[in-house]
Image (cartoon, rainbow over all chains, first blue to last red; front, side):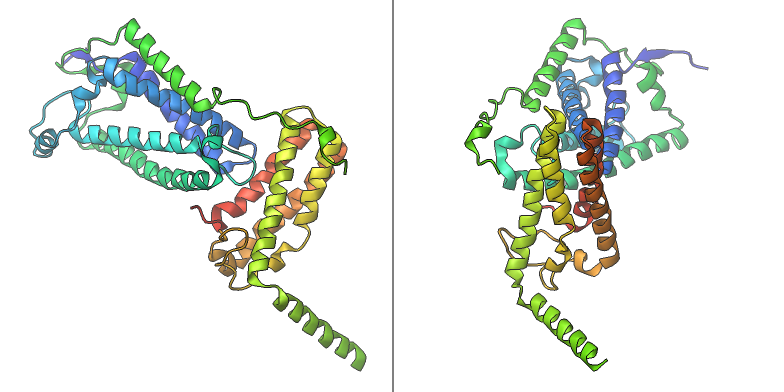
Length: 229
Length: 151
């Protein structure tokens, strides 16, 4: 029995991952149910913007296996993996494609949602920047992309099941504990300063997405100026 | 008996011509106007439950929505008006005209919640109004999801 293990996923990466799981579930449920939950759908969307911005920053300043350059899926690496000749740790090249795919789709999803409207009472926080026509287009995209996200999530879970049952490798546990059994090199980097930086990026992204910086809409004229009927 | 029959015949004919006299373009315009006017009133109610609650404003808005909901707008969905332009290009899906049961169900749900909205507004409780606005919005979505084209 091999008791060797190494540090794979740092804590911020794991917190990000599971927070994103919960946020996506909440976004799907609130989006499907609508009604008053649509306001929560908007808030959850802003939270997801923050998570994504954090992850994009953490992919640069985070620890070893969280860095994009560490698992950049070049054609050479993907080919090697498919031939069974890839022996790295962290995201494998095919999984890396899925990671980048999910990040791109979720960014498109959260981004389009900021400008969307539901033709009822809800408008995204940046709706005023684009107007109704473009907002309708982006709302259409928001619906389309959600389907693509369902497909990638299903693939993501299917891959985990495949690794668990066929390859006898538990991918979930390292994402919970951070440790992986084996002889890989423990992750380094991604210290407190990097964390502060990534959180600052996330905060700035949420602020930008929230539209809080937009000039306040012009005050409506006093009631006395409109006819009293 | 004979006169009753004649009356029935005349009414059917009149009803038939009345419907036929609506131009498709007008029908699309009028239904778009109905939804546009409701949008203002939905927004009004929302502003009131989020800001200072003005009971009279909410009653006016809820009554307007109730009136439109009960105006028989179904008559504006003439066969063939799945395509065409009113104030803008119609965004109704062709399925709206072929899946009548589901459309009727969505419309009935909307009318029911619109009637309830007027009742709740009359009572003047902000929290209850907010909750009912959510239920009413959900019935709008019930039709948008399946029968409204997303650009």
